[in-house]
Image 1 (tube, rainbow, N blue to C red):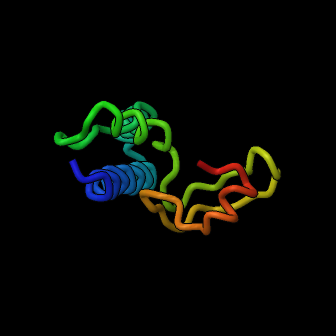
Image 2: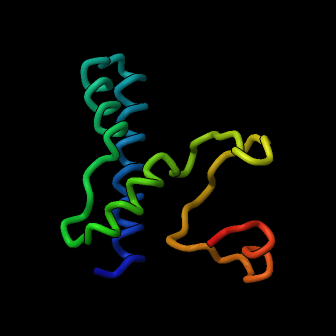
Image 3: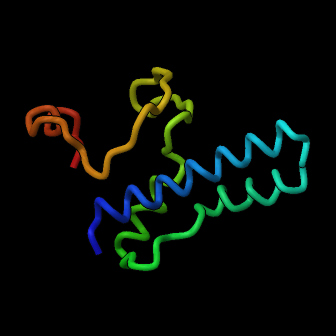
Length: 101
């Protein structure tokens, strides 16, 4: 299956789950919020055409969706994810310097 398509489909589903979670909290529907939180923690569902390798890659980044706040593991700065891409678009020199494969 096409990685780019699978990636964006999966990330879109996770983003929709997050939106539904926040909406249910706002509406004080905590039973629905609990179910949505469990689904998010489990990583949602993978697109049907996903290979096992793609599922593993998606599962590794399941928490990385727009709106998520984080602290960088190596450099300890704080940030917010604005967008997701299916592959690193930085230059080869930057990837080598930073140890990104």
